Image 1 (tube, helix red, strand yellow):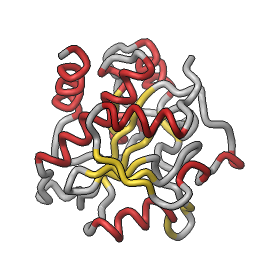
Image 2: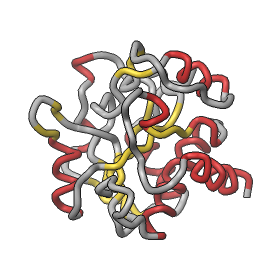
Image 3: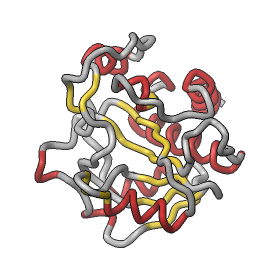
Image 4: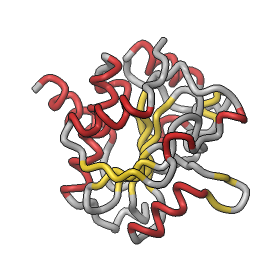
Length: 197
């Protein structure tokens, strides 16, 4: 059981991991905490945005859209490798997912298939949205992938988690495809190398 990091600690651990960080507005107090608790936290969830353009992507992830108010994550990772902090606290990113997956993340074991949607993921995961169309063709620049690895490793390092605490949205909620364009097994391997190296 881990309480979420404070906003100041979150910022500090990202910078300590070598992440380029941009602070967006009053991100430290931008959240959905009135809809339910944030924490205990158990892992890091990676998404793609289905958007293009840094400014547009950051704005959508901060403010939300339609019936889904922002923030839609804690950090937006743009193509240039910058992590734009848009929220701290509960964010609309994970939605309902599989309790068996959450138990596997907590135990740091291999993930079962996600076949249920009965557990509040927004409460338990840090969320990073990554600028990408998610069509399998939009490229993932090396700077962006390195930022994803470093951001996930930073959170894991601070909480004493292994790479098994990093999951994709597609591993949490049935019917989700994100992130598309790289494999989560590959990403966890790279995060593990960074944590141990």
